[in-house]
Length: 184
Ligand SMILES: [Zn+2]
Image (cartoon, rainbow, N blue to C red; front, side, top):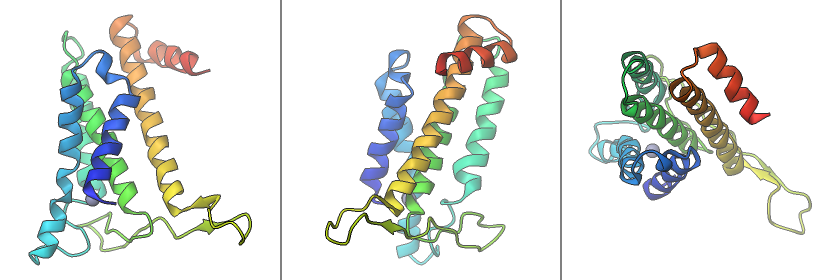
């Protein structure tokens, strides 16, 4: 997927989480910009420093590191009036993970680099109701978008738990129950 589309999808993910109601829109734009920086791989590739989108398009950069930073921020800000770092890293994790998923549509990516060179992609799928009508019911792009949507849903759910914990001074278990109650 091209970098502009990544940026727009990241912006939509931030808006879907409703963060603009409490935080400045410029923060969402800034995190969206951060999430497209891994496309520096394209320049590294053209300069001959990288192969097949590594070293930034992998689960360590897009998920493990930002999610660990989210957990650390969550712990450090538990008694703080500010939650900006945990929000920052939660949203960055969602945007970066969605970015990698979108790039895996029909194209193999070394998602475990540098631990493994295994290439993984969302397989090419194109299901059509009838050959007379050339629009798919499901294809690889829609599967990628569906996974991206699930990632956003998980992010919204985590953010709901944080909201209940912070605003209503609940422990994690009670906040989890409230968040589930909101969704059902
Ligand atoms: Zn990319």
